[in-house]
Image (cartoon, rainbow, N blue to C red; front, side):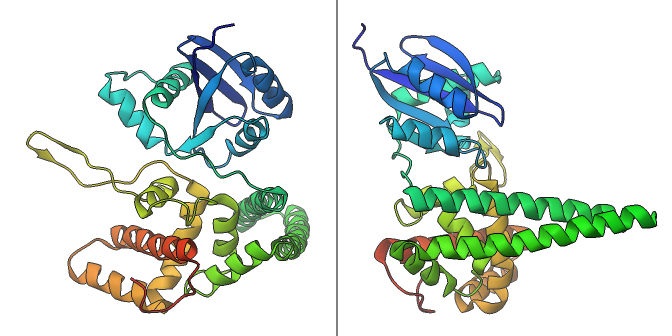
Length: 314
């Protein structure tokens, strides 16, 4: 068997995993479910794998990441913008699932990002609960929108019955989430630490615990990139464009967007920062994105240093 170190790139979608191995040059597709994860592990087992890289895809990568970690693989989850810029630098402009997997494998050869945190049983359960809650909330929103457009009394009654059921299940799920958090002292302390920050409500605190385990473990730039609020330059030659955000964990970003809207009213640091940006001519939406980065920086430093919220933190 070839003992050459191998580097694995996995392009993740809801239904499938496209896998490429370098320098072996082999590729294969697996289903993104328990059976596919098992088959992937068996397929990789003969290879001396040095590193596996996946992109953050809003949660679709979570289960395969955990499955590979349980098998002992060094797994890294990166912001999608990084490999894409890497591909462009190499003039690889075409984009398909198989090509993306090959780019990720090449990226794994060149770079050594920090490994993805390995969640314990309680953390994994919390992530499942939080993900299910997001699904219920999305369905509730969809049904409410349909209800507003409905002019049939029987259908309206059915919609209201389903909404009542979802709301009851959401309340039950919230109790399950709180019980899960209190199962582990470290999670409970972290939750209370986050909740003490003005603007961070229960939903935002749970989202950070469940979907951003890197909080406090990486630099402020890295945490901003993971969430997808790090500005990327679009400058070339004489052209100077606006900085834009890209990629990252959309579920965390959406939650923090709402948290920042609250923070600009109730958090003295974020409020002063927002007002300074607006007075300087920054557009409101851009100012909110900047506030998300500022809020993330504060939270990252608090968790890293195990400090409680204080308004003088900068």
